Length: 191
Image (cartoon, rainbow, N blue to C red; front, side, top):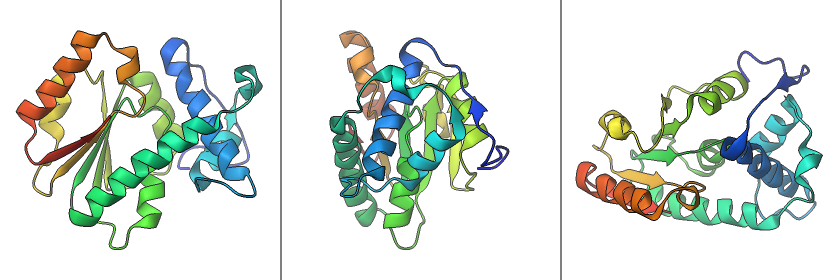
């Protein structure tokens, strides 16, 4: 963690849909702490430990969230094994720690990462997650298609929207998918 002291917890204030980033983070960290985890996610554990927030308010953790992360990781790894210099675009990434899970799983580590999320989430990510020269951010809505101009398509593109589409109106979701297909060449999508 760059600016954040590992021993001093950081206050995090998110509301509405953005607060679900904390719920999913906590679920992945809880699963990673199990003796027999279905997903290894030390960065999620580290992040939960660094945040001053009442995670108990979410109730019992849900294993399906870790299973969803595992499914997305599996798809991304398959793509990155074939396209090691690809750019992964994570739409509405929240407090996902996918970059670090994939980074530890892949030899060579050439892929790049673009996080597209709302400014409050980007602020938290910048405060609490380690920097990497291969990670860049766009602090904006995924529905503001200007982020597409930031995507390096030369090595291929893998687009994820792990926790986004369920919060969109059907027309918005379809338009987002259509715009990705129209504006970004050589891509694969995991929704």
